[in-house]
Length: 390
Image 1 (spheres, rainbow, N blue to C red):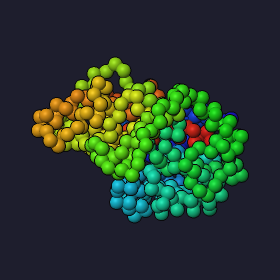
Image 2 (tube, one colour):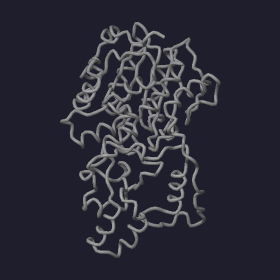
Image 3 (cartoon, rainbow, N blue to C red):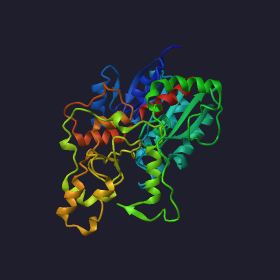
Image 4 (tube, rainbow, N blue to C red):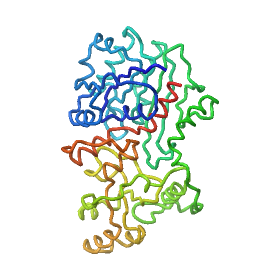
């Protein structure tokens, strides 16, 4: 097929661009647009040959858009107006303005793009911004499908549930049967063509499916909500045990760095004492980790998992009777686990960024965490792009 001309909006550090490369679809990014200076430096560092527009989308005129003659739009609008822990300002949030501006531009283009892919947080699917998107797509004659997908569907041990929409200009048809419902898995069972497309993508991830199902999870009875240790109940432990024995998901150790001085990533004593009971702790042999957010490494609660690097001590042992110990004794007991943060490179691995992706030297670790937390899973997007273009 002839190479597609792709417009990348809200380009960030290039997650969409890497997904496009990973999909093997013949394409050229004709312009990437973002206002984040730090993200743009990272993007330019990795994609020096791509035209990067450091400007607001509202600053791009209809004539500017028409000159690009793009066939595909990839975009991940700001998620803050829709996130469940935010104010949920939706269309009244100023950060939604640029997205609504593009929706206004879309019907007025000289030529509609053939393909559109959008990513956002869970919560976008119930927003007024989503309603405006669907209304515009219908007015322009697009066929579309919505998804709520996590990388665990691809055997990647990281929960990052996100909303996706793929749209195709008429009269093109999808290779699978679409539905008005939001799909929560890839439609490999809906048609032979879709299965063929997804099987070709699966070959890129065959390492994710070599595990075998381990021992059966412990039975949880009526006392499932009783706290066992930390703040975790028997039901929580059973769920984690079940996830760690899911052979369709790869172990975390495949995504970890091997030779590195990890001392700077060890959790400091104050953090251990104050927040250890709230942390999601995983081992290299685990097949799970919680979503890494932009606050990782700075805030503790709900920003991502931490890694237990000393495997000689069981987590239950380290947390036993902590409320009866002095701070010095607590610290000694918790330190046996040698807990550390995942490195930015390890998070990038989980997000599907290739080995040649890197940050400019002047990018601080805190900035790297923020930028990765605002990015997306390139493997998931690559798979959706295959479905979109097939």
